[in-house]
Image (cartoon, rainbow, N blue to C red; front, top):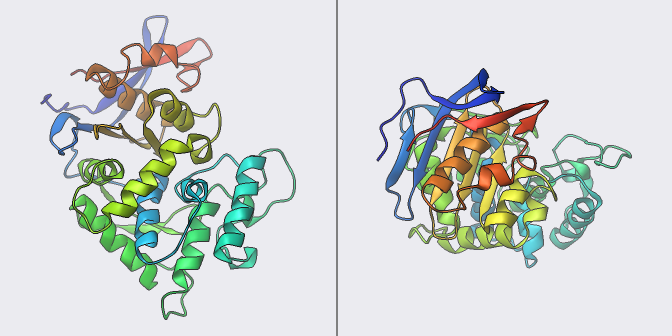
Length: 311
């Protein structure tokens, strides 16, 4: 196992050999059994908010509560921060019809489609999660909005997350889409996220594996063609899910899982650190960062983002 860094620098911006800026954070890589292969920073004490990276775990919980989704493309949308392209809007419409959810039941804010047009909740990047929440919440005797942290559905999602991570949450707060998200550690989250491909013996195992399979089968639904999560998933046959403010989780078909969190919320730093760890441990090609620098948004205005981690 690698020695933990003390300064938490996970990535630097290199301009012609000069370090122009740097990003601090935490990073962990585990194997299929959950053993730590590499760690940088306080992976088991400091809490982070995984934000949208939590979506596939939430989706599995709601399937276990009895909500039925026959179409795995719709399940992938429930796990997605979609690109609001016509393909995503059409899929959201199909999913709403399948679940019997009307648009006025959705509590996510209106957004404009990526191609322009009128803003609506159905065009929100988190619409799949909200469709699933709105339908699942009907199974509870509650008068609270389904996005209220005290709603029984949200309490169940928190409890399932705590069990999967093995970490009691320290904060439950509203995400940008108004639904609650919960804090955990990067190690705890890695242990949970790996169960999208590895049966960890949890009561949610069947549903976690199905959610993971849906994301692998439909990576363009999870974000959008040409966008980082979709590029990583398509290139390496894996699951990749970013969460706003700097969290990225990637799990490979063999269960090796990387979770990174950048303290300044920058996606590029989380991406370069996660891909670097996986490449150095042989899970993906060693030249992955160089090969996909443009697609992963690592090059900009003559500079390139490089990993600062060492195995």
